[in-house]
Length: 327
Ligand code: PMV
Image 1 (cartoon, rainbow, N blue to C red):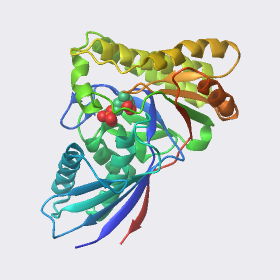
Image 2: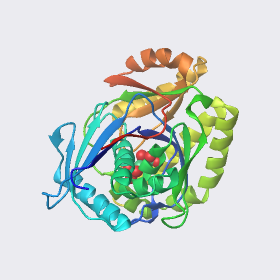
Image 3: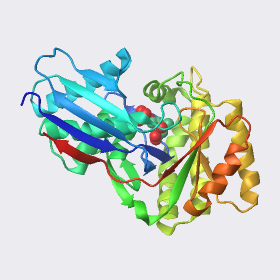
Image 4: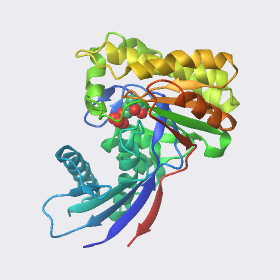
């Protein structure tokens, strides 16, 4: 199999109902289910090549040698692939993002989704969606949702086999757009892997987890009925709950910047003018504003006027991760 390679493409996703905290940190088995929309036009392309000359795996991102932390994360993931497949061989992984880094688009989700698909092809692991989703989860929890397009739910499960993502509605079901207001490009201080470990130190986490299934159901219904008001209420509540957990963890996590708050305070005012708007924030200061496609350019113009907003990116609904080439 020497010098064989496989290439795959995957999109990032934005969680509508968040994943924050694991019941099993080693296997990324989450404390609750989560639900996301896959983002189109932005994607990661990953090529993995077996290289018998090497004595460890090697990762480059956008043509540059990745950090030692990223190299170790890749090695740990590839050790899992070798163990599951019963095959040996170190690899060169070349990953390219067509979107800028540090703008609040989780590149780890699209990166591990593309890698899981390409590595499955190369190491002859099962290529069905559920198997690839489980494998992607081992790299980064939220990556299991990026295997599929449209609206995707991660079934929390209780072990490796039962924890994976399914599509609940295809991309053309509802024309939502994510307008990402970039307020900072600085790398987040605490990576999500560490954040998941801290979640249980918050006295609010048990309440958040105990009520997650209710929010999942409300969110599923809102999507099925294309009810933007209902979606807004549950998505904003869920984002606030996750940030409340972050802010009350020990040590505490605080990701917002003054400009984050400028946007949050403007959202209800703008909504009163009749613009359909819904905010959600991941583990960083940048704000994702969801809207309907027809209103996206109005939303962008409005966001650009808010003090501290450096840039506004657009992402429509995205599709499934795809295997592009095996050679
Ligand atoms: O997949 P991770 O470990 O990067 O965690 C993702 C955490 C959030 O983006 C904050 C929420 C989510 O569900 O995507």
